[in-house]
Length: 613
Image (cartoon, rainbow, N blue to C red):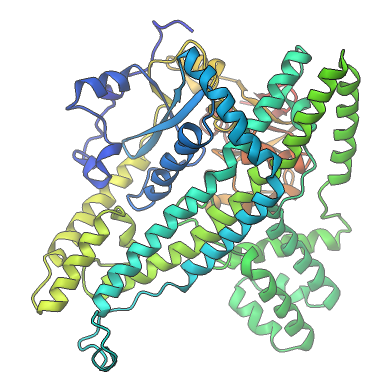
């Protein structure tokens, strides 16, 4: 890639009228270094790509906590713990409310050489003891979920209970409130320390296996490599499986008509409670809700991606859809057996092509490791982004109710316009006012500031962030950047070419082969979970990205196209498990394709073609 071709520098990012001063909403270390020449030079000579995979919307100040958490955790495991040879961490910046990332490569060949034996020792220990360490990881996650559930936020009363005196406690409810907030934040960050403990190794195992296959079999398709580790059964599929079971049970118990005739979950459950069969179904529902309904309606990275337990109409809509399929005699099962048979067929064919016994042993070893670690790549999502995040957001809303009562903010949902570092100041202000009996300064400061921030976020939503800033490297080779975000040398070149291209004039998009197969159909552009109800049977989903909670729609649609993501993104993995053609990382799909257009999705070649204007 020529160094003469580049994007706008970060320092040249436009200022959206009416958002001047937006930087104050976020931690200072996310801001651009306009007052530090050395840092500014680094920023302008680095490739920064928009993380639309995780953040298809501008960031609420509070929701940035998850980005901050993995900013540390992913990078530390690469750089300081497992000593990944070719890659340090991933740097982060905010531009007009959107998150941009930059891979930090190890450029010194001697440093790479020095890190190889360290990585082999440290990562090797995890690969050799994966099952026991993973079992321990699940125990840690269950413990931290239990702890965050138990945290309580108590509003300081006009007069403390006499027990504080009689028991000689020596502390107030106000102090306990501050302590509770600090603890819930500590658990959130600890939760993300655990998140990355295994994830990089899961990706590294796949990348190593894929590189071996490409060297051993020149010209091998990425789809053939992914098929050799497909057919997985992970807990992330369990919420959808429980919904299917509830649909089957409703039919067998004779209560399906109640679900079909009513749309309000409260009304459905009230009607169910009138009969023995309905009560039996309700018991099955309650058993499924904890933990499987702690599934975010989106990615789990935003506070307004409510989980199924908070929005029961979402799983009930899926139950209703599955009932309709059952009554038509259609199967609800994933084609797991076919995937396993295809996996073994392809694996045997490539193993037979090995020229030496040593190569065959290496192939088998790398394949075994990849299959062993691969489930974690999906399973961690349920424990962290869905189960923990859903409970965590509920706890923050409990705190927000107290802030509303004390007139520090006007509405519970206003708390998300504060970043996590500002809230301790707000609590301290409120507590001191409570203790002294004087008025809090925050009562006049924060409601006004939050209203301004709401306007800024709205202007950010109306803005389309460019795919990248800065100077592209000659070759993009950081493994996680490639397989998860789908940012490759070719993709960057396509972005550069598209700078002067009218998107509406294009008729073909190129991305990654997320899942093999070719399908034609009517496109349905869905930009978020609130638009899922518009999908019709047999349509092709076109979205910025997908979420695990969208699994029920995979039994009704014919194919998937996403703007962002690589071959290890969630959309790619799930489509492979459902045997559905998919092209991921297509870049401009949601901008270029319009709902109602007929398109062809070639999951074998990674091409999407618009067949009708």
